[in-house]
Length: 338
Image 1 (tube, rainbow, N blue to C red):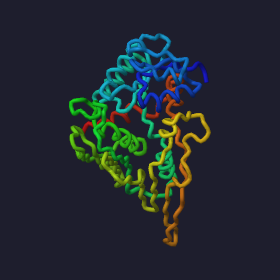
Image 2 (cartoon, one colour):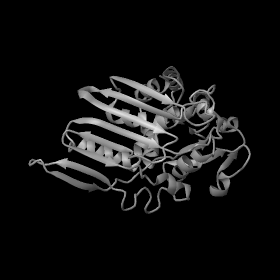
Image 3 (cartoon, rainbow, N blue to C red):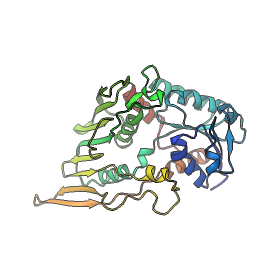
Image 4 (cartoon, rainbow, N blue to C red):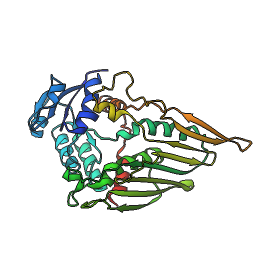
């Protein structure tokens, strides 16, 4: 690779610690210059040669920094991304990029105005389960698709301590903008913009102000039905991926290991990173010419969030098209804000 991209993070909470810093640090296409840490200076204990900025303004003022990762609370993504671009930086913005489709347009308009790249971080395109499901669909072994079901189940009765996720007055709040952004992006990555959709939400936790359950029904051409569901009070986790076609079915649990590995300190370059353990295989059921059922175990592909950062590098250095496009994000927000 050519000259590394000097990068700064706006925060070192869970996302900075797990989803960003290890990849920027490990990828030769980047140099991790520093991280904003207003109080506790935890990052410097892990990455001893970085700058620990006391404020976002200090990070924005660092002329050496080319790329800023916007991983602040949801309701601040738009404001902070625009400020970074006006300070002359490219931005990688965590999902949700904004609260509305109109704000998405504003975000990318500022990118065009300043000549800076706007890239949105949608890491679950690179989960092992999604990669495997995509591969099975694209193989054609299932025939014409009838039904696709993506789920992200949780059981968390407690109200999240992060107020921006739980307060109804705060934009981009609740489960729809949190896990919904992942599931809607998965559908859009595979099938594009739906012809129509129906959205259902519910509030079930005591004291909750925002939806903690959602269900989308997306209708696509050729009678394809896509169902996206998530809830915070699902005691028995359901399969994360179910695909039914005219020639067969594929079922896969959500067993991606990357977040757990990163949380324990594994680096993306370590041996075994992203590889699911034995027993995590998907189940492929097809019907042969004699109408007999054939059942196969399908080993998962490697999960690999590093692909996001490779794409960021090529977008900035080679002006390549980032895989999560402006249209994808605009379509996503149309569904999330509905």
